[in-house]
Length: 258
Ligand code: DGL
Image (tube, rainbow, N blue to C red; front, side, top):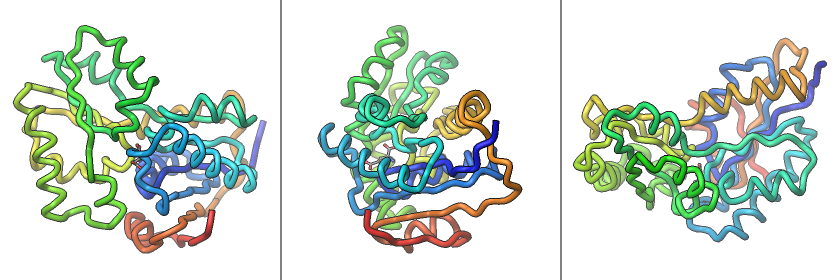
């Protein structure tokens, strides 16, 4: 079975490119369309209804572009909207959720930290997953302000360092040995986070797992492309320079209303 239609990937903004990179590295021949809804970022403080409506708008754009599979490269959109998306659209979806399981299963101290948006931490889906790990103390921290700074291109600002220190210090004091990055924007903060955390604390995110799952769904249900080469397409609805720069200016970025 082959299928030459593109894989669609969306996020509230530029952060989901961290997931796109993993997918593109594992499946370089697949055509990908990435949608950054930067105009409406951050999703993290929005209501569930707003997140569902924005996610549907993004899905419809990707379906108009004949996507064969949609990756919701946003924890906030996944945890608040994936049930509605799966109910309302006839295309396979892959979502991204904070990687609590590998952190809890491997933690020696049985104390783990999770940094995510308010929307993710308040969602029913996240809380159901967290409840499965009763033995583990999960220190939840909302990353207030982090997504906005990343969307504004202020990745390495003093304000970023200050916010990260204030969020991570209490986790260090509580003896975490794993930090789960529960937002697809946060992998871009790993260099700054590493400067703050002691070396023994491991940082995990879900990017690689999502890429592997994408490969599995293509193999089992949707079909791989038979193309030899495909240039990725990036759409954004505001601030194209920041998306370009997070991609090291390697790919053209199309600014478009959606
Ligand atoms: N990148 C997103 C996530 O994974 C959303 C961040 C936001 O828009 O608040 O949660």
